[in-house]
Length: 419
Image (cartoon, rainbow, N blue to C red; front, side, top):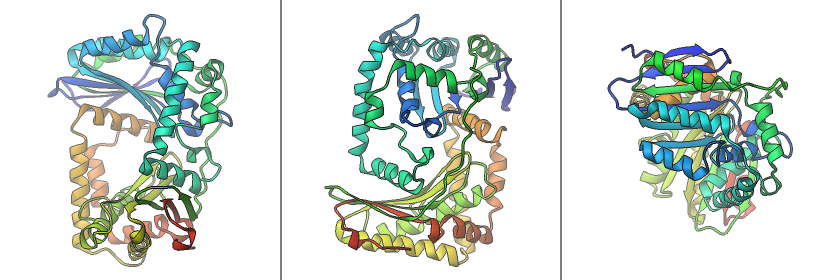
């Protein structure tokens, strides 16, 4: 059996990307729709995520309970998630149950009824989910920060939406959004695991043949403008939660490998500069790390830290100091080599499971239109030079786009006014 990834385009326009893994006994299947919270208009905030919930509330043939029992019988997993740019429905099962799993996934995707009675019940679930985010300082902080740096842009809004929008959600609004936004040309079916490629492709083609898109013109996406500044959200917490960030890079930017290496050096591992300086050497924080979020046409690079109120200002200053060093000083050869080795090892380990391989297949297709091999990614990491890091640091850690968001019992006078 060939194990190389394969791509076909069905008559409907759906792209199918597959990667056989004969050595495993499971298979992961995902339906990825290129629609997320950034595609919502005024008054639709949170609609993509709410719609994702409603797909699991009954079809023409089965109730929500019956759907849950069916996936339990298969001994697998059936779930979904919504991001700022995509909505994903996926299943994982033993290879012998793959035909039933695909059929079940297709039934949910194509034959859900979105019953009004289920909608009213699900409103309460989503409202509680929104409130739960506000009780999670780390997640709530990131929502505050993203909204602040991408002011009034749909890419910056919280994925779960707003309480008022959810409370007033109607079935007509849901189905209208579905008809307008969900289209075969915006859909990728990705499969990784143990299966026969040709038989699976025939099965997917038959299952999703009824999927037709509307003729409504889609509103084009526009990139956000990243803005700096300081935002303080006072809240009675035991710790101060800090997010320091600046402009990042898009998913397919030429410098994306350099940014990954830069992240590994700054705060992406336990040997990183921030972890060693702030936690290990000074003991000022338990949790501190850096990371990035990348989209079709934009990105954010950020540092997160949680610390006590007396140490908050010192932690912020240390983070700023490390950012300045990366903008102004060439990274030593041994540190660069160590970061590359860490990154390559993490990458290879992350692609061992069928679920992670399926995710990679889909994202490669959605963002770049082609499969990126592991050797190509390794080559991209190895090619990063100290000069590349310096150039990327001057862009992604630039003071003019750097913003500080703080959540906790702080006073505005205790925060830096500029960077």
